Every structure is written in C-alpha cells, then in structure tokens.
Length: 275
Image (cartoon, rainbow, N blue to C red; front, side, top):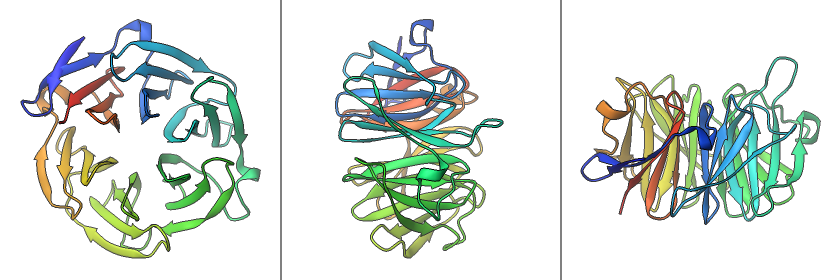
C-alpha cells in the first residue's frame, strides 16, 4: 500500500492486491463508516473500512450484474446495473449492515415514464436518490427508502448538456457534467429548472461535492481530479496526473477526511488526505 497527500500530490494510500478482488472498479460510495466499491466486470461489491483500508467483505448475487453506480440512503445501498446482452439495466438495493438484498427494481417497476438505458451515476440527497441515465440523457428522482419512482427531475437537454458523465448535489442544486461538450450544468433540484452552465471544463466525468467544493474527474488531456468552488471557479488540480494517467479514474467518494478515487484500469482504489 502506498500513500498520496492531497496537498503535496504524493501517494497517501493505494489498495490493489488480489485480496480485495477489484475488477474494473467503476463506482464508490461512503455509508458513514465504510467505503463501497462497485466492480463492473466482477459483478460484485467490495466493502472497505474507511479508517484503515481493511477489507470487510465482498458481495455478489444475481441482482448485482455489471454494477456501474452507487448511492447510500440510510442503510440502503443503491446499485445501478449496466445492461448486458439480453439483460436490461436495473437497480439493486442492498442493506449496508447485513449485506443482504432488500429489493431489486427492474424496468417495469420504475414508473410509467421511466426506462433505464445506462444508469451512469447516482447521488443521494436527504432520503431521495437522483439517477443520471446517460442513454436517456435525463436525471430522475426516486424515494431512497422504498425505491418508488417520484418524477422526471431534469431534462438535461436544457443547457445543452451532452452525454451525462456525472451528477452531484449541493444546497438544493443538482450539478451534472457533459462529457461530450465539456460543460457543468446546474439545475434546481426542487423543480428541475435550468440555472446556468460552466463551460470549457477538461472532459468532466464523475462529480462529488464535499462541503462547498466540487471535485471533478477530468479526462482531457489526461486523467486528473480538479477542485472547483460552488460557483464553478477552478481552484486546483488535486491528483498528480503523472501518477494517475492511464489508470482510468472512474469514481470519487469522500469519508469526511479523505478523498477516495477508483482506478478502473489499474484495479485499485486510492485515497488522498484532503483536510
């Protein structure tokens, strides 16, 4: 295990040995104690102690198929499953304490106007979950406790958003990234109304608010993580791109002290001291 500081841009800790069974880690979530990792190719979830980095358990099952996004509401871990050949996209809800399945939501259970094509990312706010569907280019709201479909929250065509790469929430506002047109777009969560765009971001992907700062995975000209304030003003580059380039940064999480980053191509997870 190696170490990287968020201030000096040196390694703080990287986890990647075979014990963790990472297999294309593509999403992260913090449940208040532990970090959860979605293994896209491994059809599994890995749970890690956030304070020590120790492996707690690996979970798999018939309702965890190519997991691509995660969000935590209370003791419910939402898992967005990527569609495979002959198997449509779906959600699994897992109890974070027991590791047992709570519910599986398939296309027919997600509301009359909702069809999942590609649940690229999710974010929890209060007791609700917002899901960004890259295939359907929209963001919709669900009850995080029951799984009930609530509404079509945002039509991301507003603000000329193209190919949703990430979504995050801060102070009543939803932020979404456009991985094709290099924009960040802000919406009112209560109404879905377009607020404004922040343009010319370097290939934005997954997003994560920690307090009032927004962290963004950047893919251009090479992989890095950028820090922005709540107005969209660039502050600094966090991750040393000479270390991370080629590792396929795919997801972010924050445990109150450290910023966690999933390295898709390297089959590892790194964390960086941010305070």
